[in-house]
Length: 483
Image (tube, rainbow, N blue to C red):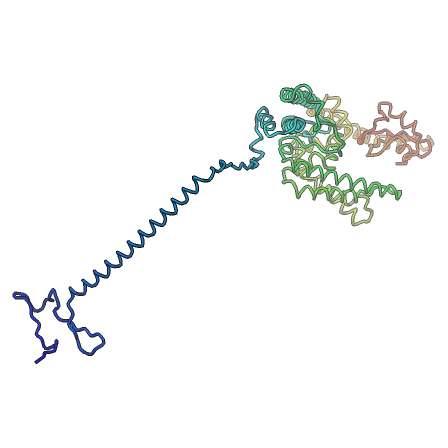
């Protein structure tokens, strides 16, 4: 009786446990197009795979051998054809010229000899080399003049420049010029001036000097902008003056003040506060007026710190006073008077008590006279001034005592005696103000100009200054009791 594969008992080698899997499964269930399970041996399956692999390898080897033979035939054919044809001409290399890029920093050098050599290496024309070197040397020495020279403009606190400073500046400028010319001659030869296209004089607008430790170190672009602002300011001023002249009018001080304020605003956008102050100390209208004011006070000689302190204290007040110039309404006059008092007090604080007392005394013509007698020594002048005032007060006291004595004597005079003639009144003294002259004084007091001159033989009427005392003689046309 046939047994199914499931009914065949599984056998294990002797000595082996049934729990372990046998090395070879003798029976497998396999079905191909049938319902019946067929047993297949594993070793037979591997033999089939080996034969198939061998056949495939044989086919690949045959294909490889065919390809090798075909390539060999092609190479042989190509060699035969190459042997029959003439050899080709040698290959030619194409040369492409490319412009080499360089930067100006690769050419420029602090050594002028190397600088000139680099310019010649790139084919720069000689005239252009000359112009470049001259411009560069001129710029170097312009900065030296701006930083090494001490000019009169830098002494903005002086009403008159120091002659020693001017001489030293002229000598230093000459030395720098000789040094500049010697350098250019050594670099470009003796004929460099004949081709100088840079340092030739060219027409330009009036400019301001920007030198010294503050303005001299400004960048070139900033200096250029300052000069442009100054030029525009001059153009606005000239246009306004021309317009007023065409209308037959005098310039309005208030309009002039507004023009100056516009220039200040332009400079304030460009310069830092210390730079702006340095510029204003040199070139502003208020600084010019302050220098003139100190210049009239002989032997006062303010220091730089004193001038700067007074300028800082009065500059804003002076701007307001300029805007109130020619004002006639009561409110403006009251404001102007308050500003003038405030300005005087600001000067007092800026100078200090001792220097302000000297400043105040120098406005007195009598003290100026004593200062001249003391050869400019303030201490001696004050002693002479105090002595004169003491003598004057004593004389005034004696005069009052004598007047009282005469009054008592007049009371004792018999009635039938004629009265004594009155004592002549002392001569009056007029202190000159700005714009006063001998003609205006004569007109004020109704006197001939010759009488004014005769009463003041020691006064030079061709060089009158504010503060000079003028003695007014008695007028025969008016009673002696008139003021």
